[in-house]
Image 1 (cartoon, rainbow, N blue to C red):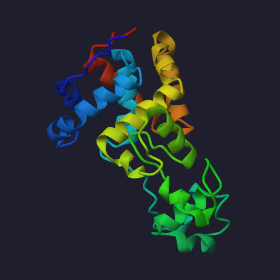
Image 2 (spheres, rainbow, N blue to C red):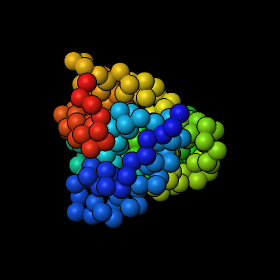
Image 3 (tube, rainbow, N blue to C red):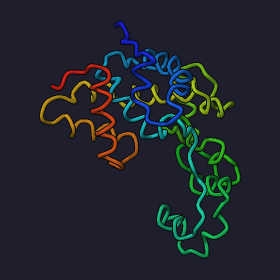
Image 4 (cartoon, one colour):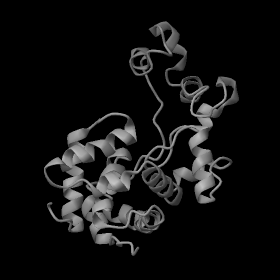
Length: 221
């Protein structure tokens, strides 16, 4: 199947930051390459994909999970099962490495806190790939050794490719194909749910999607 190629003008039109021109130059080729690799081949699929990654990465700026928490109450709210009290959370404030090793221990293929896997395989990429198991799966599928070189996912090629791999592996192309008619928004919300487990920033994602469809010339049906 021939992949629709997005232009720099289209990508720039999707970006609102002051450095949109420069950012579009940096990201155009990695995004086109990754969409081809992930069978994100039509303008409809691409509009949904681009809307989601723009939200997830803050306009292609943030390629690493932010684990800096200044107040213990924040940690208790985000990880109530890990922190029974604010006193227990205090040592992990402004200590992202220790926090990652604790909250991601013995999950997603990671070892215990002492293994360092939580920090080594923290969220990276345009759709944050998290956990040793996902890094293994990505590496096996693509041939890029992110397991031994996890920082690869913080560079444009790796960040984009990992997002497209996740997108395809989660069946999001098929959901994007079905985002039509009166239930289009609901279908798009299913994509959001598979990406982050909820519908965080739902209206902002939908607005980005509508704009992406307009820029890429996707019909309104």
